[in-house]
Image 1 (tube, rainbow, N blue to C red):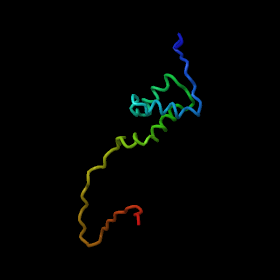
Image 2: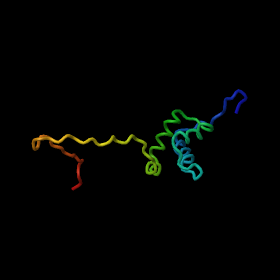
Image 3: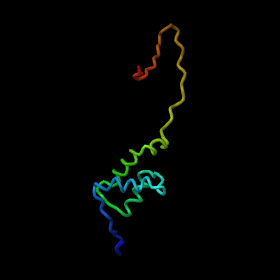
Image 4: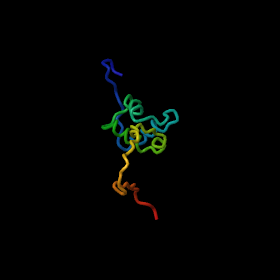
Length: 102
């Protein structure tokens, strides 16, 4: 670190970025951290253009991380009963399901 708070960072060439990311992501002490935490460890030592986006994409391509990832999406609302119809076949419902294997 320099006296004015600036710091020297090692600039990583394109050929070595994947190796550096692998070391910081797969190392036993790294623990498959998410994109932000991996980036927080990287930016104190290294630099390359688009470092955060590269780190984010690397994490998205990690299969073990994707299997363990918890999805935080809003649950669906409560089911609402439909009023009964007086006439048969006045209302017809259909469930669609994608292409089935043969």
